[in-house]
Length: 383
Image: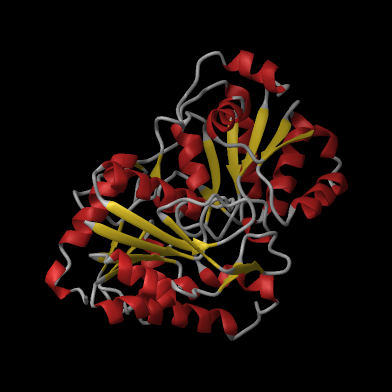
């Protein structure tokens, strides 16, 4: 098959969405399918033959995380590529251009909703009522133009349905590279190599306001009062300066190691060198970093918010003492068993509770959904 993927977020942007799309595209290509990605041109982006970069400008305050994209030439390029199906991720400018192209080319559209969009309005200073509700309705309107909609969590689909989604939908987990994210032996040697202490709490991913990092700092500060704990931060983002300020205010900046943005085996080594992963974000549908840390064998402690409860055993977001006790218990126990609950998932990746899936399963399930679309035939394409 020939599959066009349209997204407003893609590598080298630091984003779980970008990682998910890249992993899916890689597996589709390995299975013999032709894949072409339409994505914004961002700083340090590689020029690849199967990626069409579109003119884009970073929104102020987002540190490159959010882009204003002008999809010039996208329709002509898609017409030349002749896709059998278009897969849209995120309902930004590229997503809308893809929906328009699908109508002109008479091919079906599959949509994947990765995130709760209203949580990002603060970047453009529009987080006041009634705009969050309007954005959710706008998202439902967009995805209703798709033949099928997927999301990595049931809560994401429930929100879309509550605001008017009319298209069929199903849950498909985010894929992770289990060949990369895996438990490593010699954890003590990794700790010495990275100068990480014996009790390390990990913060991992994009540092942004919507990740609720102040709560993570407050919880770690309470842990540090009772344990010789160290906070290890892997990642970067627009909230870095504010995070350092809050760490200093809580007097734990000296107990914090910033390792910066890591990739590949160095990233997996840093994850393995830590003793517990703490995630306090309330805007996740199914956190890629949480799946990756769990695949590496690191225990995860998270808040009960967004789509996170569908995958892990969690504590309530309004109960910091419980979370503090959980962190202290896990970080000092020496156990390496993830507190992960993986429910059964059927052949299409559909279930009421999404669990992490093997990377090959992501491609197979996406293809299974595509092939079930009505009217999917090369004869339906325009010339």
